[in-house]
Image (cartoon, rainbow, N blue to C red; front, side, top):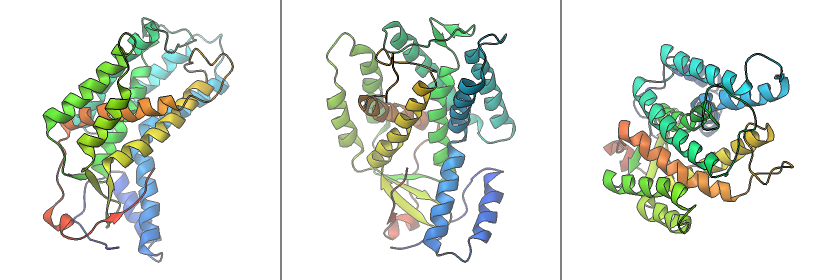
Amino acid sequence: MTRETLPQHETGPYLEPLRALVRAWLARLPWWLSEFILFGLKQAWACLFAGIMLGLMIATKIGWQPGWWLHRYDFLFLVAMAIQGLFLRFRLESWDEARVIFIYHVTGTVMEIFKVHMGSWTYPEPAIVQIAGVPLFTGFLYASVGSFIARTIRIFDMRFTHYPPGWLTGLLAVAIYVNFFSHHFLPDIRYPLFAATIIVFWRVNIHFTTDRTTLSMPLTVAAFLSSLFLWLAENIGTVTGTWLYPSQKVWHMVSLGKLGSWYLLLYVSFVLVTIVLKPKAPSARATAEPAVVASTG
């Protein structure tokens, strides 16, 4: 394996001092171990919005009382709005990233309204801030995926080799998004879409920097591993009763079929992010030497 020292990249005003502090603490450890620890910390930082939302769903499930003057779903909406504002105020997100999140918020809410109308899942609790039975905090759950992708690209200074043209990735994203609606009336083409993601992205490698080391991973592998975590998060959503599937009159794990849905939806998310944050190619120096290949979650 090879290591490569790159110029410092932007990690944000709060993570950068933490990274320097942790690096000093870990100076006596083997480089690969300190890089692994820093990788985990930066992943957790990238997941901050999603982690807060999941934590709130768990906390409100345990402590919320039905007789309180504010509905649980409306509380989640208000807090999500406040978190978004604080992220911008303290520069935890850039305005470009906020634009991505807004686009994802809209596309996610539209899909939620349709899916709830079709009976794919339900929101069993009341809410004032809702449209057609869909509480509006749910848009922030989708937006947290966009936030994670955008923050990860920045925090890890991600670069992409052999990235396909925008018209092709856009066409694939539109086909995936439309299939989430059309499969209720037409044959489900998710399996051809799975194949299409591999055909379009099979040559794409993500080059990312933990601290001073550049590593790489195929984009399709990263999408699959990320979808695993989203599937686990969806189980948290259902076990807390935040939303329920028709088969969950008695709670059970969300079907693995939803893992495939999240895998496809991640490509829609990623393409939406690239509308604002254009994929960058690695520097000549980064591609001159073999990259370290790592497995991530």
